[in-house]
Amino acid sequence: MSQYTYNGLNAQKWRLAAVPASGEPTVSNPLRDNGADPWIEYWDGYYYMSTTTWDSTVTMRRATTLNGLKSASDTVVWNDSGNASRCCSHWAPEFHRIGGTWYLMYTSGNSQTNFDGQKLHVLRSTSSTPMGPYEFMGTPLPNQWNIDGSYLELNGSLYLMWSEWVGADQSIRIAAMSNPWTVTGSHVTISQPTYSWEIQGGRTNEAPAVLQHNGRTFVTFSASSCNTPDYKLGLLELTGSNPLSASSWTKTATPVLQQGGGVFGPGHNGFFTSPDGTEEWLVYHGNTTSAQGCGSTRQTRVQPITWNANGTPNFGTPLPSGVVIAAPSGE
Image: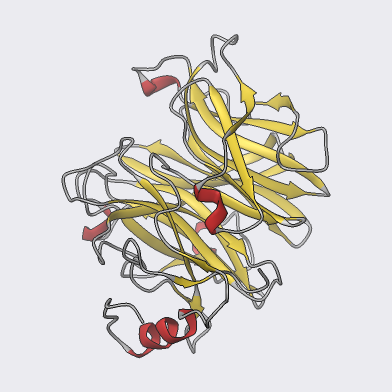
């Protein structure tokens, strides 16, 4: 048993479930240093992970165990060094299997020092794995600044979710797609920073990530400035019938993951499923001191999700560094 103390009944249950039995595979945080904006998928016997590189490349690593990602080598799966409009500042890669094909979406721009040109770009794998090789497909939103793209698949339709400035607020927006690189129709704002916990150091909602469970659709987002220890996760739920209507989305009034356990500024997350499909896991980044901000100090971290009695996700408290828990079910 670790010496870390969890507060509350749900968290205590999560702790007991996570204690590994003798001989079972385990995992501990962090999974990697310099691991901002992480994304993990389990596919065909491997965990695949990608994080922000800051340069002209998108890299990926893979391992047969989650803990094995710590020592896996990075492979460059895409290089934009020869393209002036996409050359620089590669952030937040995500790879999704849509219609049996892997697509990789990332943010980049035309400068290493000026981020005003940052936009989303989409690649398509020409193989059956997330490692590619990839071909360039397009820039879904070519006419404005946009970052942190993710996909929502719902009732046979595909949607793009992203973060964009709407007035003074960095906001979460959504639009329909005709394919994974082409947006159609109007752009709808579904979340803006309104609560005090969303405006620490800046009025920020960014990094949407979809979690679907028992027929319900949730979207986490990161709130407040990543330059502060108050960067944290908020939660939206699709409570109406139309994802392109702001009134169909309901925001939880309090954050669902925030600093704790010696982890500061936890955010920009993704989700992945255990090898046997019975568990959902959270991957996110966090700092180890309150003075660190949006740079290379952020580490990739993971922990399992539990579910509250009302059907909403319980992310608990950030798991402290070095605490050993059971690896995802099915390893």
